[in-house]
Image 1 (tube, rainbow, N blue to C red):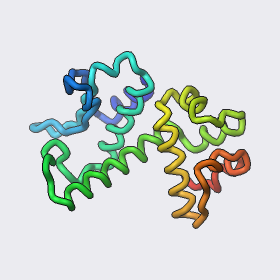
Image 2 (cartoon, rainbow, N blue to C red; image 1 turned 45 degrees about the horizontal axis):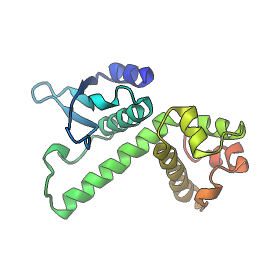
Image 3 (cartoon, one colour; image 1 turned 90 degrees about the vertical axis):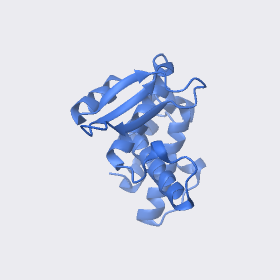
Length: 172
């Protein structure tokens, strides 16, 4: 977690821990301060003792910072279709950035070569939630398809042969 907090510090992002939602549905949010336009990430206090989830949420919010959302997420509410498409596109980009930040492709290839191949083991190895491992694998599939016109099944993405080539260096 400290690695991500140091990254926020270097980027000039203020991170606050607050109760964001009584029901626990909102775990993090990225916004800019109204006057100074300083980047701020607010994390729900329920994440303090949940390191894997906290890392995933913080990395996604950092992804929003890097992707510069095109929609005011705070005020979307009942939006028109195009605004919702932009919102989902921004969410996809932020999750993609988070997956690449938390699970660098070279480190994933190294883990697979060492025999760490199940989502559960990779989750422990990278200190992330299992769903983030699956997100990273999906990112690899998308990159292989887009850059190399190569389709690979989810079941085969962790093949030692593919990992040995770092998935054709699909992600830099």
